[in-house]
Length: 453
Image (tube, rainbow, N blue to C red):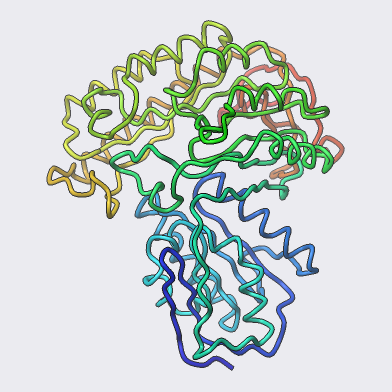
């Protein structure tokens, strides 16, 4: 039986309920996450807590008693997908409890609380108390006046997380928040100031991951190069320590800011057997004028020097870049400058995003927007450039021997895996190969641009 709809705003935290009286304890829960690898790691850690309590974890497309949607607010498209997932969950089971957590919940809790079917809206800090809040609902706990108690948000706390849903790879959260305040980004508003785990705790979690039989970890965070900023430790010291973890033979670094990627880090990765030759360096624009307007902390010249240093030491390293097209006041000449810069740079592929206006950002106040038509044209050009760069990168690797970690997913009789330098490879499905590292020789790619061995 559901009663009236109550909401209570708690600073950066909001709890929303249609009812504060439930007669039946839930037996199944389904998670769905949007956005970054940090979201995935956090949602995975939350799901393990429910498993430990004997709750069945279901696929989000299935009928479940509870649906948890971990949200993203980086773009308007991300917001739209989050709303669609809420509607999908309510349609799958109108009687289900729906909890919406994460960055969207932190910045726009009132909007989400009014959506049909939503019972809990938990911001960034609040989501880590999801188990307790759901238990209160499902055990028939009655709050005074139907309102849940205040739970204070704590931006200074770091909550460690790692994923274990995939047997072959784990995303290990080492850092959270950001102090950069780029003019287009709301992440510092949603996740707060930069903070990180300690090396001791990261090593402990890495050892737990090894014990689960997972061969590869991906170091994740909002700004991982900032690791240890407030504790006297450094990212370089962290990877040095992780390099010594017994049984952890594949350590992949996720996105790291170019101004925080030092020669020391590049050189250590180049000579390490465990740190994989793969860098994700966000660029955002190849025009210094636009980089300055974005409040980025580097120039194109510094970025290029990082790429050249990597390739000088390890020529077959995969280097990916993030690019935003259509930033306010980006002229045709500015975009042309970006295109030429990218064309001449030895990158392996690009992640291309169209600028999305965000509330409460400096860029969002600009009176010089770029038309959707121009955004699409520029995006299409960079996607085609990315495809050419990726084909060239794969061609450069033809005939090389690489170590492939085979994954469990398979389709049309084939299974896939990734090499150390993030090249996608496929082979005939063999369940005995799942979660195994196999040395293979790369021949030529198929019609879809994948190496078949």
